[in-house]
Image (cartoon, rainbow, N blue to C red; front, side, top):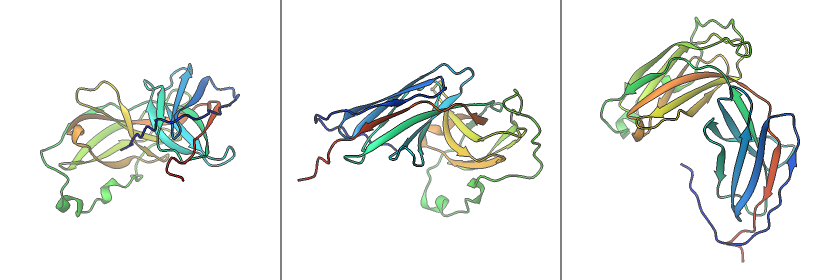
Length: 233
């Protein structure tokens, strides 16, 4: 779980943006010397959510911080490396979901005995027999036959039929009981149609679905420079 640490220090903010032809507009602000908030606004039609990414080199490889559902428009990045420039961007994703399934797990904790059992069913795999004949970008490719198999009191295996021929990947999404938003909890490569999940205590009863997704146009890039190390002499 992400931990937030707030340091009440004063620091100068350095920020800039780079233009793209994306409709996703991003800003980044340094709230404290080692904590940043990234905010975005996106008018791209049919957007399902955004991948929030960062790098410490403008030409380097970006790392995904979170797959955020479409309702989310900000992300807090805590515990930054001191005296370092962080570059941020968001990538919108779109794509259809399979019919959702509500699952209620039996009572029980994830104890040592359960953890010691074979969890090979969790590994994302491609089960033979899928069809990949439709384009997501043309409005097809909806995954079907979404099934959930309870493996133990805290583990579920999911399978589905892959109908897309141009997906960038799959997202497993969950909506816990008494909540209203589906949140991505696992991202998988193209052509995957089986994966497993160890659930959180709040997910004893939850609704799950899988999404075939493709990327939209990447936002502009915003950057901040973190403050000095507060523990340095």
